[in-house]
Image (cartoon, rainbow, N blue to C red; front, side):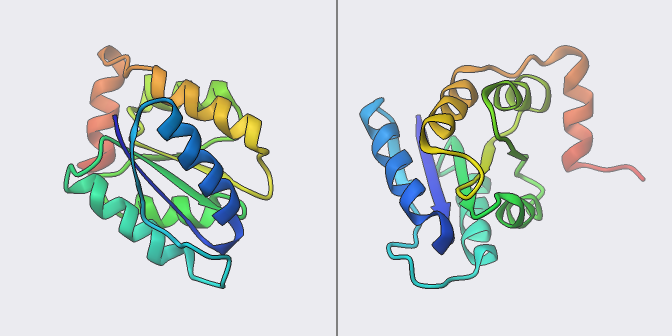
Length: 145
């Protein structure tokens, strides 16, 4: 699977660990930065991640910041993205099964490395359930209000 990963300065260490973990699992990983813990703005990296998901350059995305909240909001500004903020494997699996999430977000200050890996495993191994969920997911990108 082709996966892009991006973070802000608060999550650069977790990003590096997860990048290596994903590569070890055999995935092709695009690290969109940053490379250092120097201060950066999470929207810049969230938008960059959303762009490669929208363009189909990658199959899935991993968005990280201190809490996971800010970068998930940035990613979700792109209608092609369904970014789910998760903190444990069940929510990661349900994000895929029920919401066809194509990006997962986590907070480096809230989620440890082992839990983040478990979330990634659940996210990447769960298929979208379709069926009753399909129409709802369609509305996420094409609202009719």
